[in-house]
Length: 126
Ligand SMILES: [Zn+2]
Image 1 (tube, rainbow, N blue to C red):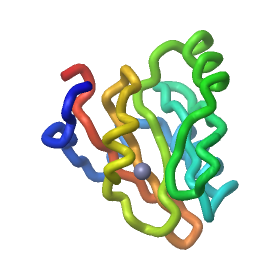
Image 2: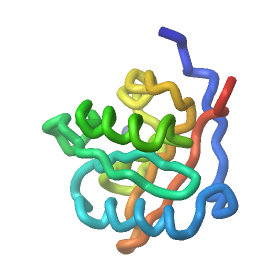
Image 3: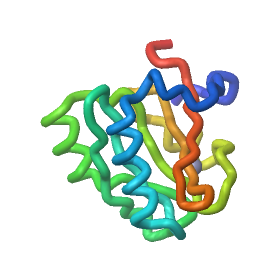
């Protein structure tokens, strides 16, 4: 497994990269589980929520069945999205460990006054 410690490049919210409708779907998913972590795949034209089967609200592990369905229907995601309870958008050690999906872009989100705030990490394709 590669060491990604030096890889992530932070970028501020860049609405141009993700369609507003996709962001709205991510936000709705986050709002459905404000005290826990939600995760999903972000595509150019859609957001696909994945069940978090980690059994913890401090980390995420996407249901392999959901992942398989999403990959077969829509292909590789543009980014992997997950939320953090609270307001910390910093990647955790667990996040680096889980970064085995083929997409190298990760989006971390959190709710602030009920609205989604998010940050994109990674440099896709490198
Ligand atoms: Zn995380």
